[in-house]
Length: 318
Image (tube, rainbow, N blue to C red; front, side, top):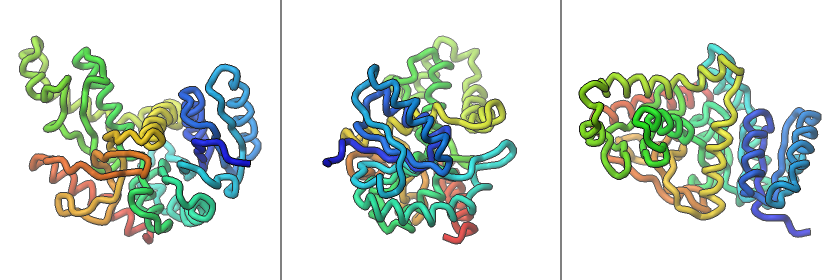
C-alpha cells in the first residue's frame, strides 16, 4: 500500500518527541507520524493518546514502529539521547550521545535514505556534525534545530520589553546552542527599523538603561533551559513548537530563513563545524546560508563559539 504523505518519523519519543508529535497533529503538518522509542510501553500509550484526538484534527495516522517503518519518510527527526540533568551542560553528554548516534544514523540511512535528517538531541551542534559524518549524506540534508528556540526566546523577551508583538521583532542568537551562544544586536530589527534606532526613538529611552536591560535579556535567554530544567526536569514545549516551524519550512518548500545548525564553510575563517547561522530552509533541507556581516565583537564571539564546539567534537572521537 502506498504510504501516506507527508510522512515524518521521530526517533526518540520522550518528552520532546511527544510534544513535537502533538504539535504536528494539531497543526496538520503530517499525514503519517511514525514514533520509535526504547520504552515500548510508554510509546504505545502516547500513540493511543495522540490517536484518540483524530475526530478533532486533520486526518493523521500515528503509529509506534521500528526502523523498517521509517521507509519513505520525508523527514526523520532524532530526539533520542541522554538527557541533561540539573548541574550538567549540553556538552557533558556529548560522548554518550555520539556513541548512540553511531547506532541510529546507519539505520536511518538504510531505511530512509532520501529523508531530511533533523537533529534535536544535545549537544545539537556536535550531534548534527556526527550525523553528517556518519551518514555520508549531502550537508544540505542534515540540519540541527540549532538556535531556532534560543532566537524565539530572545524575540519573546524583546517583545515583552518593548511592548511589541514578538512576531514583528527579528533578532538572532547564533553560534552554539549552548553556553557560547551570542546575540547579534547589530542586526536586530523592530518593524523594519534597526533595534538601536528604535531604542533611541523610544519615549522611554532616557530612563530605560537599554544596554543594561539588553544584557539581562540575553542572560535570561542563555539561562532559560537551565531554569526550566531546574523547575520541571526537562524542556519540551518550546522546542516542540520550534521543530514544527522547521518542519513546515521543509515540507512546504518555504525558503524560510531560520537559524538552524548547519555545516559552516569559510565564514569568519571557520570551517568544518556545525553551528547556527541564518539559513534558507526548504524541501531539500538547507538551500544556502546567509553570511551576515557581523561586527568585530560578534565575529570574535562566533570564533570562540566555533572553538568550543570543535573541542567537544574532537573529544568525542569524531
